[in-house]
Length: 501
Image (cartoon, rainbow, N blue to C red; front, side, top):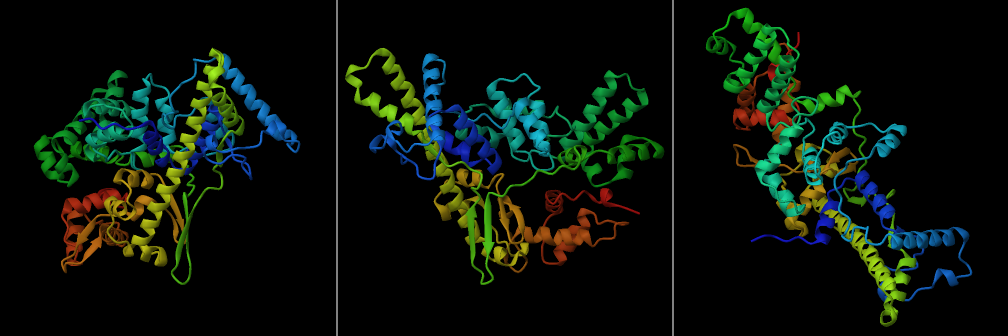
């Protein structure tokens, strides 16, 4: 069986996943491309569905001002020009193909001094490749799926399923992985890796390939090959700093081992963070999608940030044309039939886009309301230890929305609160059961872990196994690899990288 997805569902899914700034750009692009879509006036002449309502023809309105008349004439000219080139327009609903910008757009952003994120830098590198439209969409989807450190933690199988169900792109996991391998050739080295081991391997392979092509000294090539061997065959020993065992297994001298250790420590476990540094520490300017207000009595309210979003309506001139054409169906010429088809398509596309915006608003409102209800203590006190366990399924059940819709709303959206601005994903966490049987959010464990590392002696930083034992003593019995996982999620390097004199 194959799941079918309508064009309207696809449009709804595309709009709901966009953060605010990209959504505004998408709305403006749609207004530019579809002459039947225009910004709503203070008192719109037409309600949402123009087919069933009488209205005043602007041409017969003696009170119409010059600007309104000029706008109507310009739209009529746009219609006439489109009719002359009839058949060249795309008859389908517009489909958003990612966040790739043209050179003109990039220049405009630069002139206003907008900082680039490492995502922008990666998207710029995408534009330099020869890719099909489908490959480009998947590449940009992978980039948007990267964590802040530049690693891809979503399994390839899951990404392939999401592309098939929600984006109507049917690719096997192997085909998606091939596109990921191309992404992993981007700068900085290690970007797009699926785990720490692959991240470091990619960096060493890049160095080895470059030095081989540049005929670097043989001792340098030998060292890079030795590094790659360690990361491939002895990664567990390297990760746990079993240097004596490594030296013995590799059968190398102490000086060689010191050189190897030094080179390995120069590798970057967070290539995404380093990319932000190379472009001048320019941090993505966050525009919150939600404004959350907490009153002194504990009342929490929120609003959607809609200040810069144009309010849209179907163009009255197009709606009137459609009514005129439909009332003269019996005496229509071929040219009038073509004009009717064109007008109907544009009006339908405009109305579909407006409906998708309303659905986006509805989904975002329900999701944020549920998050506030489930995490009310945090919004009142601002203490992250008060965050209760919450997963996508909890919000989906409370709102009646599909889990995939909740996931799309939660991705790349931010909420401005009394305690700071947070990504919606911040409020989600798995549950954890203490020794006393109490169910807590894993964020509590992460907070304790961060506090322990902050208070450690930097001359003798705590290894993961030591942190594991200390957490157990505090009533949080978790495995050492779980400690390593939480530490990486907090963006904290391993002990040897935290050491300072």
